[in-house]
Amino acid sequence: MGALKVAGAMDEESLRKQMEEIDKLNSRLDDFRILKGAEVNITAEGNLDLSVGLLKELEVVLAGIHSGLRASKEAITKRVIKAMESGLMHILVHPTGRIINRRAPYEIDLGAIMETAKELDVALEVNAFPDRLDLRDVQIKSAVDKGVCLVLGTDSHNRNHLNYMRFGVDQARRGWCTKRNLINTLSPSELEKRFDI
Ligand SMILES: [Zn+2]
Image (cartoon, rainbow, N blue to C red; front, side, top):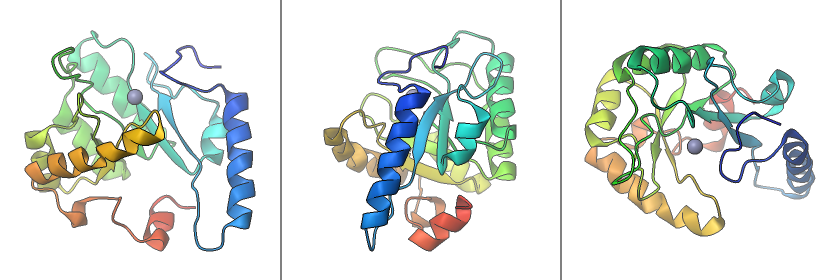
């Protein structure tokens, strides 16, 4: 088990069980494929808080910072870049960590993050959760201008949260993001190619 329990986090054993269930379902589904994925914590050292073996078995790895949010801009930027450089993550979630009216964004050099994301083909999330909306509009615009891939995510902790997708779409549009900039709009085969699965 990881050092930090992210809200609703699973230990490795539960994750494995879930992956087995997905395999079973996929073998029964004709025209639909459920991907195996998880959101993983980026530790203070910039490592992904899950065994490398399991990370490699997952088809889509999302990662983000959930602790040590008061570290310096330099330290946080370094942590995230190191995590991206592991080659084990596909998506950086809620890239600034803000929670509207509750928590200011942590210090992070988004320019440097975007540069690395583009170079290493890591997508940045536009988190649709109503009190996150992270990236924010001007940051989305900047990502679009730089040619960085974005992905809409609802940060769902239950299926009702999937309804938040519309807030993500609105947020993305505010940042001049179009279909072209989003992973969500790829066809299944393009998505499989992108994630190398
Ligand atoms: Zn998270």
